[in-house]
Length: 112
Image (cartoon, rainbow, N blue to C red; front, side):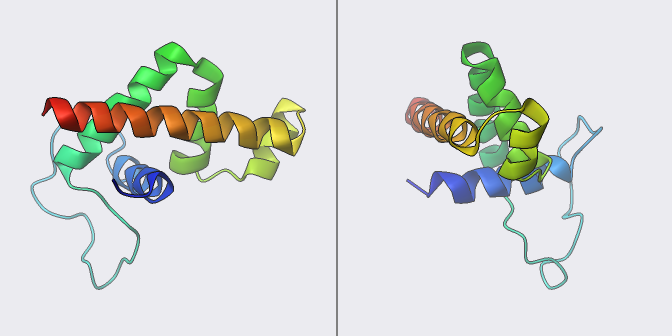
């Protein structure tokens, strides 16, 4: 299993490059030589997207934190300030959400 943080970072890059589209990309939006961000294939991106979607039903605040952190590139400190919570509170939510997503991704890969 890939490191979940790497996978979520790649998912954030993948989903951020597809905002407002409902169709699979027929070509990369940027060339590999000009962009060194980690990206996912559409198949892998959709698997992670489903796992993150499951989190929304299970833990709405965890979902919001994951989307803000990985897709919106908002720092944990900024999330803490916005919610008025201490850092350990947000990092705890983030860690639980990452663990849930990791389990969901593993389950979805087994089913495929």
